[in-house]
Length: 392
Image 1 (cartoon, one colour):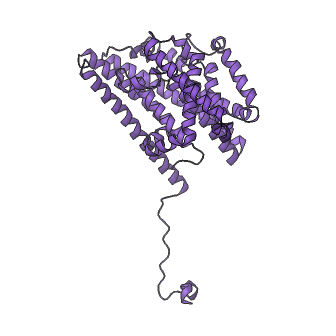
Image 2: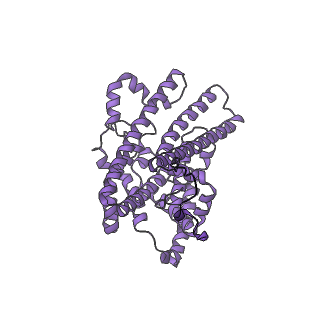
Image 3: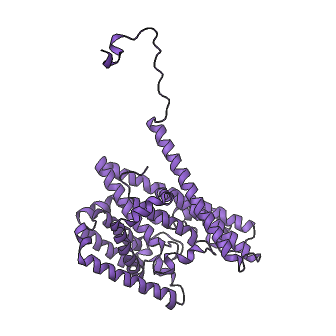
C-alpha cells in the first residue's frame, strides 16, 4: 500500500531509472541501446538525482508537518548514515566481485574498476580510503554524494520554501564554482568523486524546488506552457539527432562529473515534456498498470545495491562468453536480451520481497495479525444485559 505522502509518479520514475541503471552497466545489453543516454546529452543519473531531491523535500515537509521539525531533522541525519552504510556495503561487494573475477581469470576491466588490485597492494590503506571517501569503487560512487545531500536537506528545504529565489541562485553559484571546489573533497586522485556534489547539488535543489514550489494549474493551462512544450520537444529532437548522427565520440568524463551545462539543458527539455505528461495524468495511469516498477522505486536503496551487483555479474558473464566465442553474431543480441531479462526480473522479485518483509515487520510492531485474545466461555443462560436489543 502506497503511503499518502508518496507520489505514485515519482516512485514509478525511480523504478524505471533503477532498471535503466542496471541494464546500462551491462556490456552487450540490448535495452541499453534504447535508454536515455543514447538520445540525449543526459542520462538516468540526472533523473535519479532530481527525483531524489523531490522525494526528500516531500518526506521532510510531511514529517515536519505530521510531527515536528526536530523529528524531520533527526530522520534525515539517520538517512544520511543509512546511505553511508549502504555505500560501505556496496564498496565491499564491489571488492568481492573484483576478487572473484580475478580468481576466475575473467578478462574484463571491471577488475580494475572494483579496486581489487589496489586492495591486494595495500588492503588496510584502501579500506581506510574507502571509509574516508578518498576512493570509491565502481558503482558505489553515487552514494557518498547522496549521503551529503541527506545531511543538507534540513537546511535547503526550509530555504526553498521561504526564499526560493535565494535557494535557486545560491545553488547556481555553487554549481559555477564546482570545479575549483572539487579539490577540497577527500580524494586520492581527481576522479575519485565520479559525481562532484558541488555541481550535482543543482540537480538535487531543482528537485526540491519542484516539490515545494510546484507549477500552478493556471500556468499549465496557459499559452506559455504550450509554447514551452513545443520548444522543449524541438530541443529534445535536436539533441537526439545530434547524438544519433553527429556525435563521433563520447564526451569527456568531466562533463558528467561536473554536470556540464549541455547536460542540464538536455535534461530540462525532457523534464518539462514529462512534467506535462504527469499533469495530463498519463504517467499515473501507466504506473497503475505496472505496479512492480512502482515497488522498485519505493525500495530504492536496496534495489540500487542489488542492481550494481546484478549488472557486475551479468556484464562479467557476457564478457566471458565473448572471450570464449559464445557472444558472436547472431547469438550476441540473444545473450544481451537474456541478461536484460535476468536483471529486470531480479529487481522486480527483490523489490516485492523487500516490500513484503517491511510490511510484515510493520505489522508485528503494530500488533497486526496477532491472534485475538480468547474470551472466557460462559455457561448457562446469558445475563439480561447481554441479550440482543431487538429481543427486548
